[in-house]
Picture 1 (tube, helix red, strand yellow):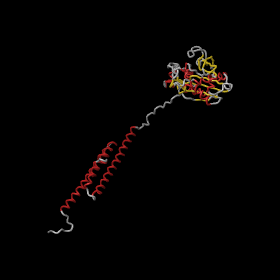
Picture 2 (tube, one colour):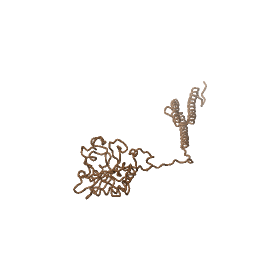
Picture 3 (cartoon, helix red, strand yellow):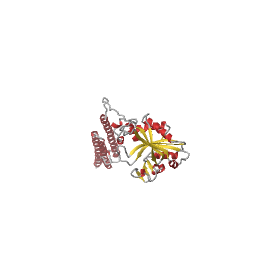
Picture 4 (cartoon, helix red, strand yellow):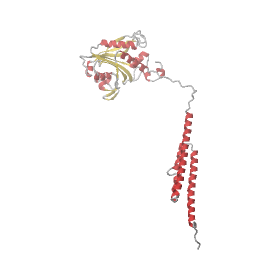
Length: 365
């Protein structure tokens, strides 16, 4: 019998240690190869999409590194920390390489974008074309200045109105032609698109104690077929004065001041009897032709006069409807189409051109 010497390892134990070492070396070699393949693939990537695909392939939940680490179950308790440490280093190296590659790709993309958006400062600049105020806007601004200078205030109201404010409160009876469906845009039986700016006057009289001195400007709507002198949408200005002792003479004086400032200092005015449901007495007002001065021309059709507006003394029923005592107060009102005034002032022969937004037309004013 051969005695065992100290330190002698039986053949079976040596084989076990050899196999164990071989297994660990195989895992280490796989991790090394994985790192090299991953870094090589990442460095070849030329887009963020390819980088993301590489990250998932090597570091994802079902990636190559995870597959290798699943084989650690065959390692001993002493070997697992060693392999785990190596795996963490491999993961860190791959992640660092990914970050560097991302930064490089972003830098390249930014540089490419900057080059594509580069501005040649030696090239001549583009001429900046400034717009012009529309002739309608110019006319409205002129009207505001004229009436504000006479002590009027500018009032506004809704374009979508009730039948009451548009007709009933203005003493327009149920059978009045303007209330017909063929003349008015009805939203329902009680709501319409306003046909005039007069409802603003009613709203002001309801909330304000006399004295009242206002003008209201804005868009109005009527069911008209478009032609050279008609449009389903147009602009109107109306004026209202209510106070003690207001007479027809105050109305005539106010309108004469307006006409001389708007059309010219030599303009004359003429009143013709008319009928409006919301004024009594009522009048149509003509002004001497701004083009020929009253001698007769094609604009005024040879008569020397142009119809400008409708006016009159506020009907007592309208004052009552608004809570104003007609025994104490009186007033006058007037209304005119801003589009027609603009056409007359600037010699425009077709209302439709005002709404075509043609800069060749607008640049003339």
